[in-house]
Length: 116
Length: 116
DNA sequence: ATAGCATGTCGTATATTTGCGTCATACTAG
DNA sequence: CTAGTATGACGCAAATATACGACATGCTAT
Image (cartoon, rainbow over all chains, first blue to last red; front, side, top):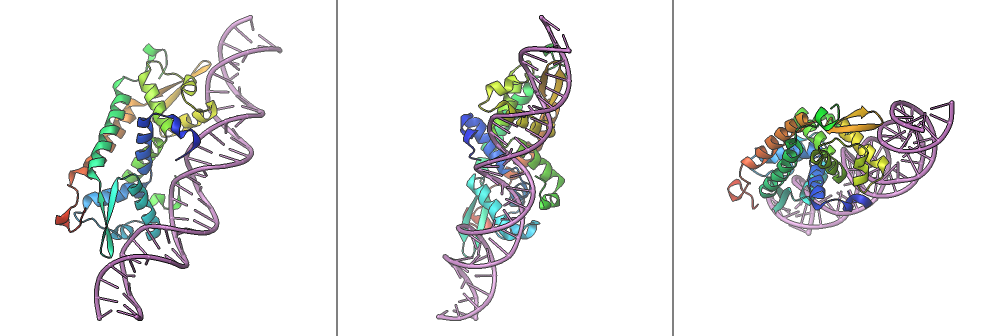
């Protein structure tokens, strides 16, 4: 994600893109849903639930952790991953703001001089 | 995005990831914000507003178009791009559902047997 | 027809992502 | 201490994404 031109955008745009990127893979979406559905914060059980190797799942977990959407605590032999609900709520706000802004102005139409 | 294992996830997870991927670059976020802020559906003016070459911007536009988040109508010499507000609203719902699901269950804590 | 502009497509180089096997580490149990 | 197990780190191959210059196409005037 650290391409040369990436830095020339708004902080807000970069943040949104950053989180979006974290959710840009079905496995990572699935991981978050899994963590949300279980009371216990499972660890390697996640890998067992996904159609991917343990190694690959571990990488996806690291990616989610890098964005701080999830957190991991070493619990003896296993590792306990949890959702960062606080951040998730904040991100939800951010996305909502974006979508509202994008949908508030009625779609451009003939009035604006275009055929859409 | 069409890796081998991608297809073994829920339709819902794939859809969400698909849209998230479309928003996973600051330029594409910026494009949507630009289209939302202007009454007229600008075309190549978009390129002028972004710190990227016209060619690169055109590619980002094609990606957004591929996911149907925006639509383009040839308007004589120029091309008029518009937001697909209908889809945007649907996507907003989808994301909200996801985030609510992820944040409704209180974070796992000592009760669940973990230190998070 | 000719010239000129707006756009998209193509080819190319580089950076990143994805997926997995193998190894190193760390802790638990015997 | 010796296994045994759960995890992350490392390295590698293949697939994608990113960015851009050069070209092709399609209108609009003149």
